[in-house]
Image (cartoon, rainbow, N blue to C red; front, side, top):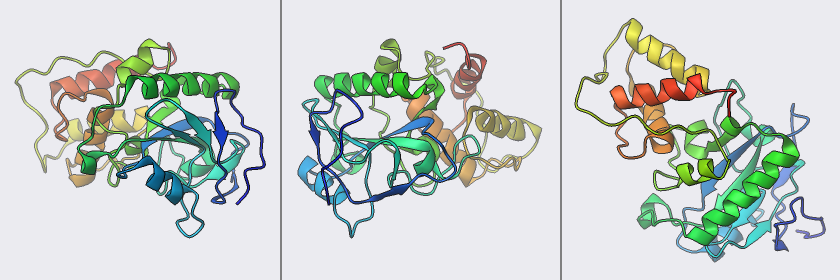
Length: 254
């Protein structure tokens, strides 16, 4: 393990090199950022794991609760953070992205709120990365966006709205939740296929089966976790669909 590289961002307080990286494949430069929570009881344990060669996991950046930022892997290298997933047709998200680990014990640890200092530091880091790498707002993603069947991080308590107010990410105010019909589990037909097509158009990896099946519910839940966090149930109700349509309509304007 070596710490002998210069940080890419002036916001980095420490370089804590991880050996867990390789060369990017098929991507001359990263074009998206994937946000994670560490999902472990302590920051120290998470950092040790990300630097353990036997673990074969890593990320480019690590953000403590107090807002301190460390860099573990140079941005031009392929860190091992996203795993199997898909976004916008790309399947090797590790090669396409920069990974940011945010210290939080996650759902298994009660999903506590992210401290203000930590969110402020994350916003500053993302603004810096986006400016240097020309990353589009809609390419600032949750781990759950790219791997909806496997992952829930950074979770429904992550304040995407606060990031958007600071000019980070793509966001619209979620449509109000009202009583009304939702897609039923197992429902089939053109309306389901149209919903799947809209999710795919936004970027989610989903097959256009025309069936409201378990994979579709997982993608809908991931969408809600990011964009309509007041209710994450995998049910594509009117609020979910309206929010999705508004996001698609706003692509290219932010």
